[in-house]
Image 1 (cartoon, one colour):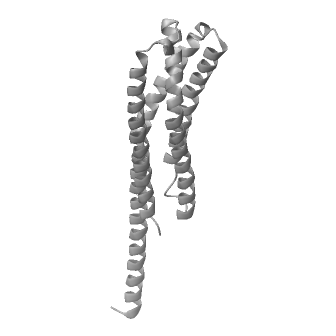
Image 2: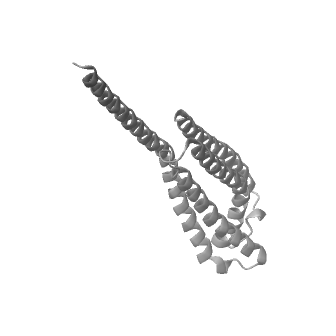
Image 3: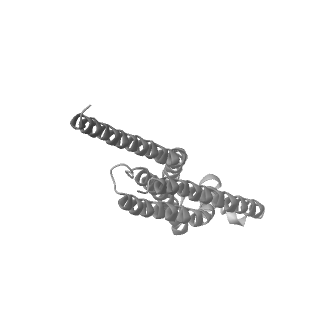
Length: 197
């Protein structure tokens, strides 16, 4: 084999190796993108089911709005409707945005910036949901008493045992849910860091 033929074979092999490296990188990036999106699939399903329940509940309040005969009850009704529609839809939108981050075509820097912004928005909405759910619980008691029984629920003495138990349960459930979001977003962030050039 002459030197010229050897150089030609070597050049061809180099091209093949480079093609293979690019193909492997593309496959790894596509797999990483799939893993990244799957991180948020389960929580998106739960949030979607919760959103449907919330919107049906808002419809129930709206359908029975005529039973709310004072400004106080009407304000509670408006708060409940807004809470039950706006917060769940905002969380779904934030989840859609964080899932849509393109790890393949964006630069690493752009990916980190987009992810950090989307993660902070999602976690902010979760914190808003945790704190406002305690207010919403009392609003729900007021509305349930008025719509279902046509009376002031806080006049009942037995209700306070129930209120305390539900508040304790709500505290634990809220902390658990927020920690799950922290775990999911942390895991997704680790995937992004793995593709660092």
